[in-house]
Figure (tube, rainbow, N blue to C red):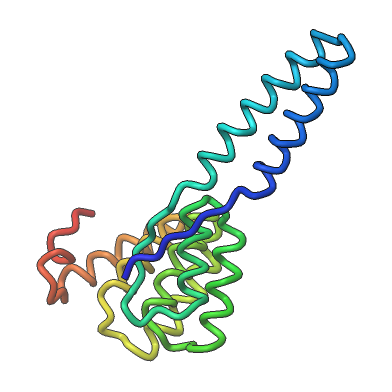
Length: 171
C-alpha cells in the first residue's frame, strides 16, 4: 500500500508575508529592502513547492496509522518522530515483526545499536528461526563494535539459513 503525505502551509504563509512586505517597502521607496524581501519571498515559495510535493512511502497492506506516520516521518528525515511513532505501534502490537524490524532498523539509523539489540533479542527469544531478525542482530552487534560476536552470529545464520538470500551473505 502506498501513502502520500505533504506539508508546507507555514512556508507558504511566510512567502506571502514577505511578498506583502516587499510591496510595502517598494511603495515607500526603499528599493534595496524591497528587492531583498522579494528574493526571500521567491526562495520561500520555492521551498514551499518542494515541501508540498507528495512523498510516497511503502507500507504493508495491514499497516496501522502509527506505521504510516513512522514511514512518512522517516521519508522526510524526521527520525525522532519516526521512532516515536514506531514506539506507539509497538505498544499496540508488541509482537508484530514488521514493527519490530522497523524499530530495530530505525535505532541503527539513529546510531543506537544497543537499543536495536534490545528490540531484536526478545524477538529472537520468541522466534529463534526468524532469519531476518538474526541478520539484523548480527548487523547491530557489528555497529555496537562487538565484531567477534557479529561474525559468529552471521556464520551461525549462514549455516542454518533456509533463505537463499541469507545463505548468500558474505562475512
